[in-house]
Amino acid sequence: MLSHSKLGFGLMRLPKDENGVIDQTQVQTMVDLFMHNGFTYFDTAYAYAGSENAIREALVKRYPRDTFTLADKLPAWKLKGPEDVERVFQESMEAAGVDYFDFYLLHSVEEKHLPTYEKYNTFDFLKEMKAKGKIRHIGFSYHDGPELLEQILTRHPELEFVQLQLNYLDWENEVIQAKRNYEAARRFGKPVVVMEPIKGGTLAVLPPEAEAIRKQTIPHTTPSSLALRFLAEKEGVMTILSGMSNGEQMKENTATMRNASPLTETESKAVAAITRSILSADTIPCTKCRYCVAGCPMHIAIPDLFTAYNSQRLYGEHARYQTYYNKFSSLGNPASACVACGQCEGVCPQHLSIVSLLKTVSEAFDH
Ligand code: SF4
Ligand code: SF4
Image 1 (tube, rainbow, N blue to C red):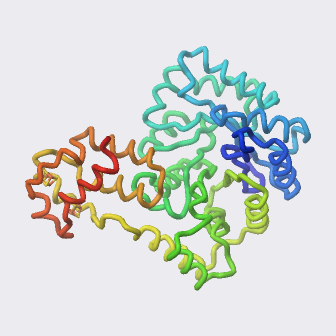
Image 2 (image 1 turned 135 degrees about the vertical axis):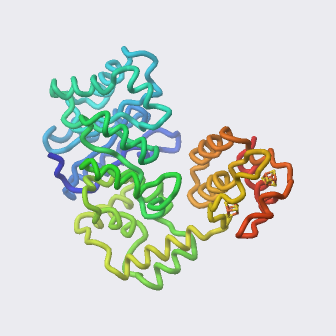
């Protein structure tokens, strides 16, 4: 059911002019380049301001409907009552200029949004739209852990595919849990649409040490091509979305994905070394043994707060890790609550200066 070329055009980061308005001429050029290279999957969302209108003009009005596939998404945070579900869906259809979506997703299903989707019967609505031919395939994008993912897939077998944040840097990340989410989706036999394969551009321009590894070991590659090929070879990956913002990125990515071959052994080793290099940068070497936690009189989740700090140092995305930090702070106390009793430092096998490190963490997250 879901066969097409594996690169998708993510429309979240469309090119804009100096006034912040989407550059429609450039969008049209990119759509043409994409289509002429044999790629057909476009991913928009109600929440990507202006992108539905942009793709209507650049794609829907200019190409036969059966030559491309269009994905759109329903955002929980725009729903104030059950009547909004159909209203938002209709607005998306009108903005995109289509009478059906090939793929329609619940946007960013996570612990915070799932109750809204369930309260307003959006799952039943999607099934109804599918039965009426207005949606070909229903799915959801996901930003939480594998346990909740399995619960959702168990409760809602009607969901046909999952969109996940996957890239080689997040593969073993404890917050994003890319690998574990991918494995959970595949256990349920669901095809996977990949988002953030290049981590918002982070893996297109490597930090100096990581870039040196690439140049020394696999100079024939580019950073972006490595990131895409790491995912293209994975079983069950249906589409890899890249939020391309200019023609150069599109030329490189379409060239990579036209003939994407699996990573060679040498390339896989280089990717592992690049990953290690990035992950070793300026972070707190806590091994998460949790020996320090039980005796803390202030009930500070020390290793979890360190994980939040390390993750934002490595990956940026401060808002995401602020949320993570807030979650563990609220389970106990924030880093600023440390009274410097020294209990934790006395038991830490890594001999970390925890009191001082918590001050650094507090400066980053406690406002
Ligand atoms: S130093 Fe701070 S974090 Fe460590 S045990 Fe004492 S209060 Fe808790
Ligand atoms: S004892 Fe040290 S290494 Fe272990 S979790 Fe606490 S801070 Fe991390």
